[in-house]
Image (cartoon, rainbow, N blue to C red; front, top):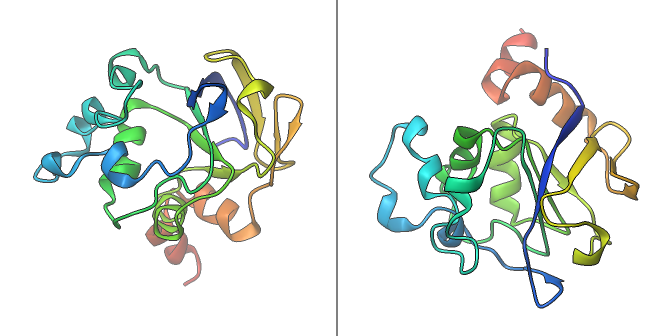
Amino acid sequence: MASLHLKGRLWVLQRDGELISDIDTDMIFHNQYLAITDISKMGQYSFDNLNGFKDFAQLAKPGDMILAGDNFGSGSSRQQAVDCFRCLGVTAIIARSYGAIYKRNAINSAFPVITMQDAKASDFKHLEVVVLDMDKGILGEKKAESMSGVQKDIFFAGGLFEYAETLK
């Protein structure tokens, strides 16, 4: 069974001491790769179009988490922008806010997206090991929002369709 407590390295996506905001789906998974439909091949292209983090896919390890600024995942509705992280074993995204479609896609895929409105790059060291308590909404020692009840239900079921099966 999945756990609401995650432990892993934290990728702090920052430039000049500030969390990077407005990371759109094209930066996460560039449109030139949209013909790839095999989820197991998507990870290698994660952040391939995000300056300063083009080596992310080669350096990421299972269990890693990502910290970003405002409006993470804005742009198109491409599911690959969620699946590429799942392929690499990234366990959660923590951001100040999300593009609405990205957030919904992630939740429906049982991929944790946690909002931390007061997040700052200076709160964490890049690649430090942290614990995320998704139930209480705590990343390390800092407060975040906890998962909603429905988000937890979908997470534990393994996705929206699996959750819907439990409602029958």
